[in-house]
Length: 182
Image 1 (cartoon, rainbow, N blue to C red):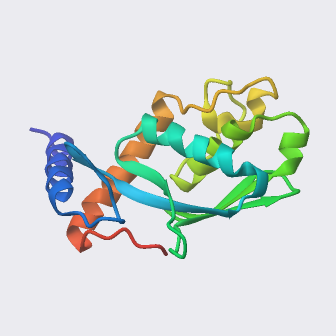
Image 2: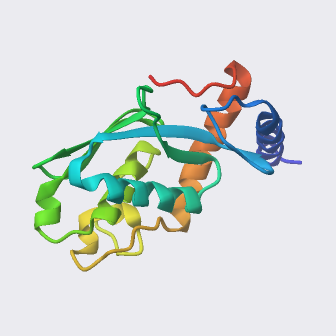
């Protein structure tokens, strides 16, 4: 057994163990797997609230190791979503934490709001821009063109997010079950 195979087996065992012990509100457990829960706050997202929820839903159906969920009222969220008049952008402070600005400039130029939201949330999940790139790559962003409305990550993007949060799950097992905001 190679070291890589052994490491993957260990991560799989830790994920299974975490599914049984994770606390409510910090992670949700599907019937057979655990996931890191990253909460987001749309209280300052203005007209982009529905697009953000749709972008989060895209990620939730695309990956298993992380779930994006709206923060409860009064709860500190991992991600703040803010509407502004600039270009869309994200500032990641650590994996699963940061701020997303849903800029109206791109919308005014004709870009799809759900694709924008999913793209910017992709940054929060650890993905870099992949420019230039085709419409099939979510992280190609604006280089997909204004006619591109694909909000789904491609296979490589999904795999990278899964790997990022598998490592987060393994770290949680070593340091306790809570995913902390940094």
